[in-house]
Amino acid sequence: MNQEQGLEQLEATRIVTIIRGVKEQHIQAVAEALLAGGITVMEVTLNTEGAPAMIRSLQETYGDRMYIGAGTVLDLADARLAIEAGASFIVTPNTDEEVIRYCAERRVPIYPGALTPTEIVRAWKAGATAVKIFPSASLGITYLKELQGPLNHIPMIAVGGVSTDNIQDFLRIGCYAVGIGGSLINLKEIEAGNFGWITEKASALTERIRQYRPQ
Image (cartoon, rainbow, N blue to C red; front, side):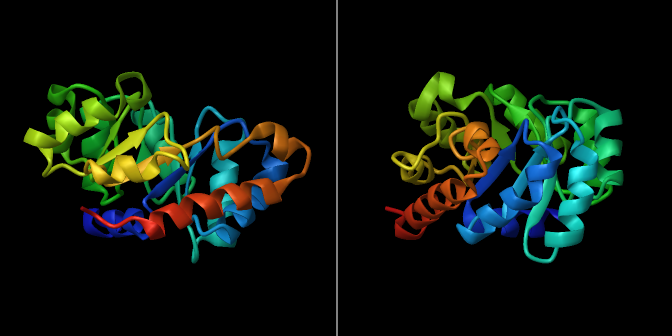
């Protein structure tokens, strides 16, 4: 999959679901719940126990219907592990140009984390498919909007503080997509077997995306 295809997958829903701390026994049901709610992009973080096995099983079951990648990829060893497990894309919390180049050379879409304009441009020049602005919740929408002035040619993914109430605001200021974790992947509800809760939240988010119209 090349860079353009990676962006097309993001454009389909504009939401990357961050799967962190979910038990392997629940991962298939979580994927089914997200799919039922219209979300097709999943990032399984490598600091989740059993993450490589989860990525493999998700690809086997949902690979033709969902875009499944690996997150919290910190270094080259993590990137190799994730790609070997079958990750369709890579997400990092940091700007590691070696990891970015490694993925770009293998035509694996890579969404590295960055915060400052310098990091964002470095990540983009190294071959990023899109750049994850993290942690975006700390600086807020105003900061993200200001970045769009000189850097609107770089697709950005906002991660942190995104909800049903404000998801349109992130898109309106120019973010290409958003990453959503705990507010959608509620571990308490998952442990209780209440996967319908996830579908309900996912449906509300995707409905807000459908309602969104650029100004």
